[in-house]
Image 1 (cartoon, rainbow, N blue to C red):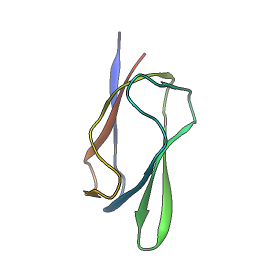
Image 2: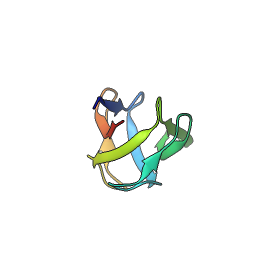
Image 3: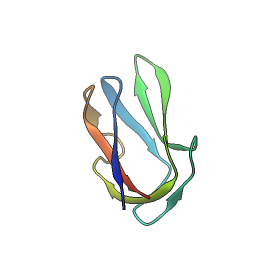
Length: 73
């Protein structure tokens, strides 16, 4: 099984988490929403699979490059 990490592309905060560990994710699906400079930035699944780790919590500060969650296909 392959695993991949979804990383933050911006510095900001976690506004809303839409998926939890064990949930399925389809390619192109929004998994969480970040907030940066009063803009909402969706975090989108690159491939389908199952979420095995969520490494942030709602309201948490994130920096560009931080791992947000891990998906396994």
